[in-house]
Image (cartoon, rainbow, N blue to C red; front, top):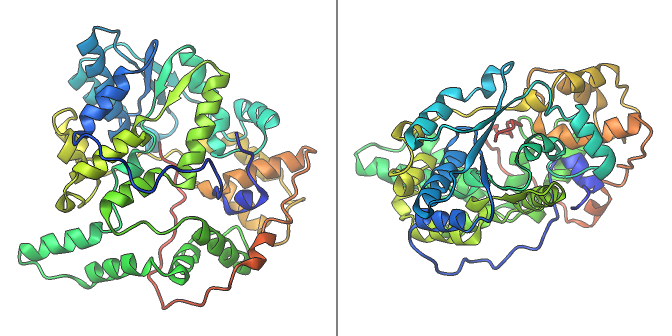
Length: 412
């Protein structure tokens, strides 16, 4: 697996990974659920599903259950992480809703009490062995892998990207509102204008650096990092079918998939993300009518209303796991950390306060691991992180834009 570069540690985001496939998917079946059933049916050996109760893992579990019943195989075993100390991560009612609907009784429930902390024993042991990797939370992945050795582990990774809203979604919503005699609000027009202006590198840089973007860096470094990221990841295409494909092949998705597959192989687990498979992506891209790209729930209802509980399809909230990863071990380290070893373009005081806050920013996880290694005698040189940026052309300032920034929240 790839070790994170100094720039990736500073940016908190990957910029290189396995080479993507072709730009457009081959023409495939029109039924995304049928494709998903085929993917689940082809799994060798015993099957487990990492199941949170969210839409994506529920969809994968539903397909796995139906595929098993059709073939007479053992049902897949749902593997659920439960966080008794973190109410914002509790999805028990959603899990019970789905399991009851599917008629699934057997499951594995793992109680998490600090086990996923980025500086917990599991993560530290992996960090010492593998170094800085993306995603940083993968260091604690053995918590799940230990429970399913010898099995194929399916996950819902990629669902937010493949089944989520597209760049054209605000326009679709506006046009549908006009059809019902509702005039556009200033907010509607502003959102559409932003979607159009994303084509401008200057505007994308400004969006990245406003309201919470890279606050752990000094101001000049924030703009430099945003320019690099803008150059690496092209803007999502307007055509929604191509947008679906592009979202499944971002650097972050490719890197995450490669890391998890590699970790799975090390522990005799075949890790799979069927929602990122080209055949499934092609089916979603080809079978979703333009007017159904209104939002995530509408897309889910278009293809999977017959297999998922209606209440789940229109679920609006999400669980958050920041405090599971930035737990007490992280806070203990942060209390005694003096910022030594980091370059001057990193705001060590901000980082320390962030790691001690109630909602640490997910983008600082790689820096946390780097700081821990440095504090414990392992050299990590980040001084050259911004050097490649000197060759990039400067980006002119964009017009004033709404103050938006990354939430920095960790989801499953």
